[in-house]
Image (cartoon, rainbow, N blue to C red; front, side):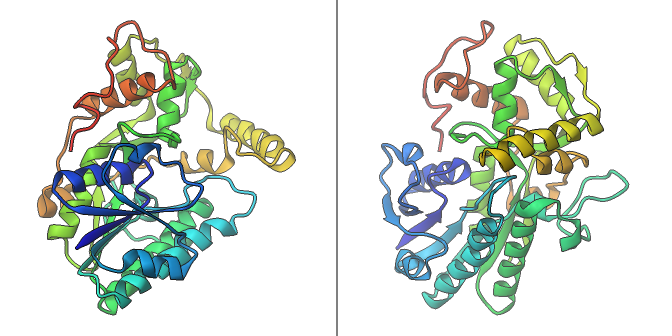
Length: 346
């Protein structure tokens, strides 16, 4: 039987597709008509056109699939119509889970985010059990993913074989949009980050996240959540690591949070409100950065066997992929390298 991947054209989803193909699986990808297919180029997958908001298309996509990996999401920190995020992330997840339930799928892995989890006030890393509520969610993206995760938990409670994974901050090849973290890397490479905020992230190799999806399908407990993460690092530490890898000079210093928030408000007003386009510095992004997004992946390591590729290796692969694909010039310290085995490992 086939395996369905939603979001297979995206960053995490395309790396998951590669791993599934390496295992000899027959892979079907759900994609919207407008979704670019660059990340699937040359891969032996069946692409079915559909949309998370179109229940009939989901029923057809799920039919004949033993397993479903729901990786697709509307990830934006600004939208002219925030309702779009809820329709795709919440209602879309509900639609897909209903289709999987109706078709009797053996296992569904729902890709949530650590953004839907709690962060302890004492500064210790968050876990799957850290208390959290909808009121703790900053912005429409986080709120929509929190509510979508509730849909997955409710489906598991009524007997749908759902396992939830909560990736932290993936880095690596095929980040075509790129993600917010990918933008940090490319801006650094292009000399566009003279300052940094005092914030932090949990970084993880994107292929470890993809592997975590497979491990969750094979070994995960129904209704359980697993943080797919690796190393907690301040933004300064991340930039210093990039500096050591590339020879690029590190940023000059920190920018005050209130100043960054003021810049974000101005940028969001002019770009978003007046011009109707995504701001380069969205307010939600700065608000989210107020807390360090540090998390503990020990449960996934212990129960699933989640791999822990060194973050330096993941950053190196990300830098090379961005340079190879024209997002930035290759730093003199790094020798050029094309799409070899390191970029396409299964």
